[in-house]
Length: 188
Image (cartoon, rainbow, N blue to C red; front, top):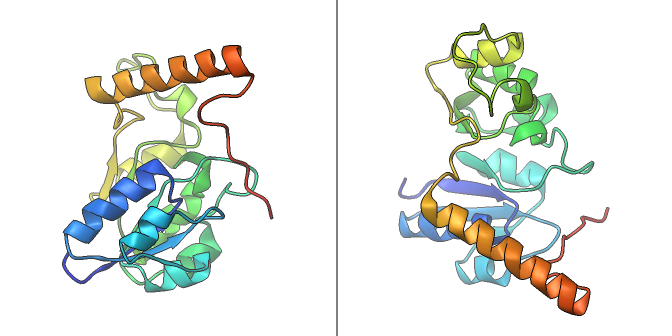
């Protein structure tokens, strides 16, 4: 990892934690987010446009919410701008374009925890059923793809933190009419 450039799309809490880890491994950080995080700048991370990030990063990690602005952020056009062999949430990526990138070798590895059409695949025991989603099935045929099935967060520490945050937000909203952590909306 030493000396590699890591592109972080979305530099909230999780993106910043990734930045700290990657800095510790000797990586250079590039980021894009409509809300620049001073913590990332303190790690010597540099904010650039998405096209610049894609062109310069050996690894691209997505930590942005799915909104109208972020749907298919990584599409065919974005993949063509990536460095060959780059590594790259749900509908933030265009899965068909990722498959094309994997087939051409433009994408070297792909890891995802969230899949755009996951509701019909995950969350229920379907081990006795055939997967009906041909796009997802094709994705699973690649040896350089890792799918964690929306379970990467599933640790007791993460679940406790989620519960604590939820309770704090509900309490603050009930007492002051404003949650502790309001939803941020991107503006174009």
